Length: 289
Image 1 (cartoon, rainbow, N blue to C red):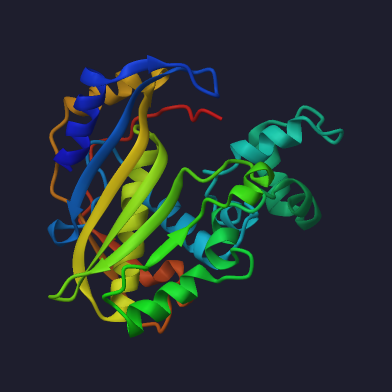
Image 2: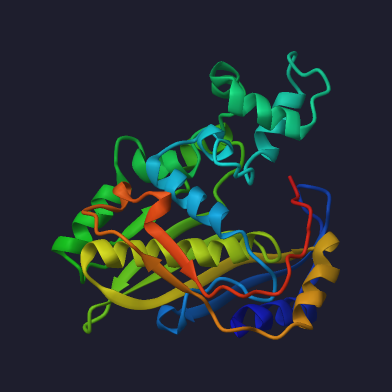
């Protein structure tokens, strides 16, 4: 994962201060691309421990089409809680609950979750029902029947529904590519890239998605290509990024897919095993909401 470390160095060297929507402030650079050969191992960052269970649960949640945080919270995955919690705090039902108490209510009360756990038509909705189009099913069909197509695309950016979303898609558009030697690659365009917290998740998530599709459609593994627009380090993450840069990269882990399925919509949490992941310790950082 030297590619990730080099990106951090490049942003710290060439980026400029830029204010942002969250009033946190960023060191920002526009237009960056990194390539991760999936044959080198599963690209899960080793310069800090990354929460793989959260990555896997989130991706399966996207694929399921869900836009409510309750399925994640039931698995003790709380990576999306901040956004609906902020909405809840503005409601008449808010009585000073902490975010932990909010998550407990989401877990224990289905009616409360239905009212306050919803994020609007975010990723899962767009992937599985973009004005009636199931983009995941269409993608699988094309990969199996017309693998050299240049239209192997899924788009989460739906301008007509952006205002209904708790957070407009950051990883907005992705395309697959099958080489003549039957290797599947994925390129993601990410409009906004939080280098310390978000990007390690995004790299692993879309690499995992590529592996799942390769397994289902009968391909070897190619590359994950990560193209980013506004790529930034939040000002309250600069010291954490610098700490990572002092750490050496370790050998990448291996990800095993344990079951054959006919569609990626059939995969479950227990179908995946992460092997030989030996990262440096985790580094805390606050998410900007």
